[in-house]
Image (spheres, rainbow, N blue to C red):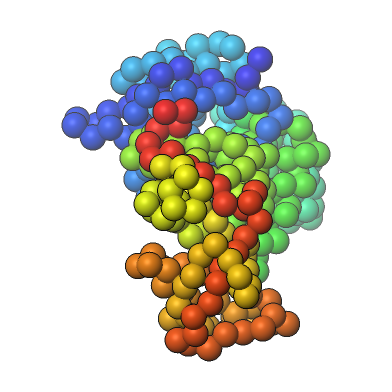
Length: 332
């Protein structure tokens, strides 16, 4: 039984289709990422699961039970927000235990459970501090402990790492992934950051214009995009137009190949002219023009580098050129 199911779910705000006929199953114990640009519908889907929004159409189920008429506090979910939403006048222990207090749990019991949750997120001994005495990463851990102390079966995370600097964000990515595996509960993680989604999730749903465009493993999303939008949005990709693909393969459809998969060879199926080179440290980015199509390759530093203006041949392994469909809708 899926942890969360969307059955033709839509959420409209007037004429705006924030979520448009979404069909989705999220497995129990899965780390699931909702990835997409701002306004794509991913956060609205999270709010629909949490109960902060009601669907205009369709059905949402959590562990098989319909939840349309359930208020947020009666669902088996909890949410971690980007802004932490901590009470500045309460210490860390009381922040974590706040939900238990509202539920009527005794002081000794809720403080014991709050301390256990703080230990879980590596903040043991911080219970008496105020949020203002903590770093950004520590405040994020407090918010995480507060969400986990109620023992939800599904944890919703809405851009939780967006306010952190790069180094701390990468550290928290590893900690979240480790914690999810230890707890074994379902994590639903909303982000616009492709690196976060690919590095942490078991599966990723790519959203655009209120629709799910593709669902798959990080490897499928990156190496086997189904439509040009996914190829463009997730990492960097060379999208070849239908006319060029037809000449190369006989198939009339767009195709994608990642820059690191392109090779410079003495003979190859595609002739191109070098239009620019950029040193990136471990690699060099080389730009080409191939019959009016702009392409990019990433060459390792030990590879032979061409010069701007050189005429070269490009090749690739057959499995690295991925044919796509033109339609955006998943499964179309």
